[in-house]
Amino acid sequence: MTLLLNVLSGALLLVGLAFVLGGTVGLIRLPDLFSRAHAASKCDSVGAGSILVALALQGGLTYGDLKILLLVLLTLVSAPTIAHALARAGYRTGLAAWTRPGRDES
Amino acid sequence: MTTLLWIVATVLLLMVFACLWRADVGPTIQDRLLAINVAGTKTMVVLVLLATIAGHAFLIDVAIVYGLLNLIITLAATRFIESGRLGSEPPVGADGALRADGRP
Image 1: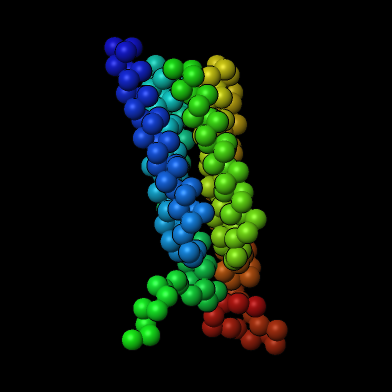
Image 2 (image 1 turned 180 degrees about the horizontal axis):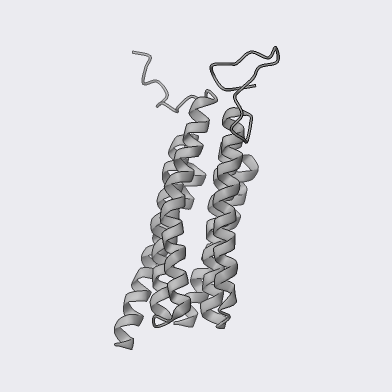
């Protein structure tokens, strides 16, 4: 049982690390605010969420692990809210979305 | 397993520095806010990692407070950027008239 929990939480850690890596690369490389917010919300919700679930499995389901699950819930709620609010603020302050250069010249 | 946890914490801290680079160069204020928010979320995860590694259960409480403050600060700053005000008072222009776009 302990081995199963260890394997499961190790796999979740690696999945979360991959998502965080991809989200950060997107935050650095993508061309405008809207696509960056899109990448960063994936990074936050799935990446941080699965790392936190892995850590909750590590502890063996004690009282502190319930608090970690509460933190997972907070992350799942907050990441899409932040992405939506920032994209709405950018849209309402007149930020233009990126289009592929040369696409609308024909 | 502890080695894997240390590796994850180290990689997350390197990602925090990458996010801080975006917060430095990001062309709009929303980019900077987004980068700071992502960096804060990663810091929260690092706090929980340290709580698991070192066995200090109080660090989870610190992480909860960090995550809540991160959410509220970013939402408040976003609202302030969007409408130029924080409360629920109606938007009033310089001449005292209500403005349709909600900006002062």
